[in-house]
Length: 377
Length: 238
Image 1 (cartoon, chains in turn orange, red):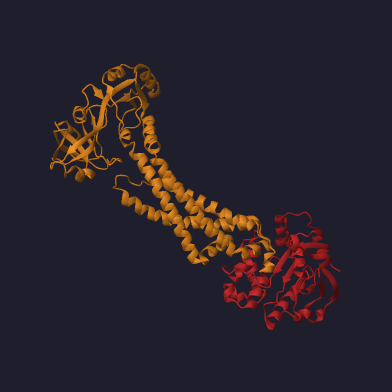
Image 2 (cartoon, helix red, strand yellow):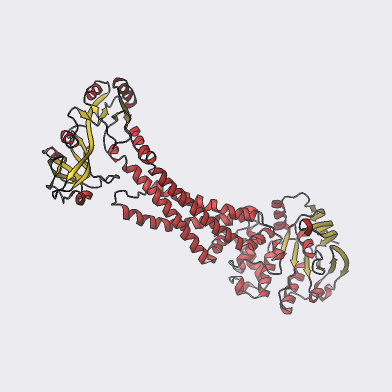
């Protein structure tokens, strides 16, 4: 083990109370950043979950649509115009909208209807844990997520309720299709979705388009834009970006999450800087001695940086354990905190950056050190 | 007569700022030659420590010349001065300045580590030097587990492990009892027997006069007297 590292670690662990305070500060800071960024990643994924699970290459949407949950209506004739465009293999209508779900006891709760043709391109329920897709062809059939059973007053398939005074029966159950708005998704067949949302038979919320295998999606998009007035044509990726930017930045939710993360970063930096600074101050005599016996500045900086890195690694490990607990506790919630390997790595890098940046104050202090201190102290 | 290991010519140095500014050195010249142990004596505030700082390249003089191994350090930047210190000068301090979190052996190794010497030979050199100062059995001890005399011997080991030509000691016996003070001076005298090395000791302690080859008296920033010591009275290290 290098003597620099040994000196750094022993200086760090020598004052246990200060060390523990530093580590608690780092853990607090990184857990705060983790929660904020994990929420951001979770939110980012949830706001596009419907777009992510549609096999569409292109989305034809009413002009000005801000996000998937912001439906206006398209005329069904647009579908036929779209189908006439070279390179369009399929163009299927999709109907979405809010409705009231009436529980058997008479109380109501809002639901978000998602309807598409069952045997066509569209947006069908996934992660089925009970029932089959084909069962949705039964009149009044709907699919819901098991996490909303209590909300919707049902316990599984075969149970009934009402939407817009029409009897619906749960025929399929999904797992993990949760809405960040907390309004349950209800999947059904296209025409029934129109009926539940009060949409005319010649209208649709979106047209989802599949491009022929030999066609270029961007070229087809250009042609569709030219052929269809008063609509926008977006690739799935563009629609995803638009939805994300609306929910994350249009609503201020993302900014709030980032502000929380930034706050955590600042708090952590200040805590580590303060403790490194006071540790350096306490060991000023030793650093002056090092300087007097001829150590280079970089030797002393390395000792301080090692201290910062040790703080970072130990603090990050503690934060990772607490973060993992928080992630598992929120896994089944409406807005889970999501940790990805990339986010974990980014948080580690952030912790290191935070701790090394915190060392700057200590390094500046050491830069000013007068080696003749060794004769006066 | 050997070449000077450290040479100071007409040094002038000021300390403090503004109204508190004082001239600590007023044209001091002093040479340290290999094989001699020089005592620098004088009352408090006479400029002893300032002279030690300037000759030890810890401080740049306002005017005058310091030569280390014949090379002037004029115009040298702080990093280069640090390099000169680690290559040519070993320090011993009144309060030892050992690193409390490092063992005796690690404290000695530190002087080699700052030079980039981290091999097994460096470890061996540190152990050998600790053996020389009679502390081989205490190499794993931390400074707080050592007596004052033992701590000072570790500090001496740290100062000499790099085989520097000049050893500058600031009141090395100041915090020690008579017996330990004698032991420390015996060690320093032994080091000064090496014709390539010189030892300069700043002291108030008249008990160590018998160890000096030369005694330099400084008062009010000027050298006022130089006299030969009584090296014959040196006590053998063994």
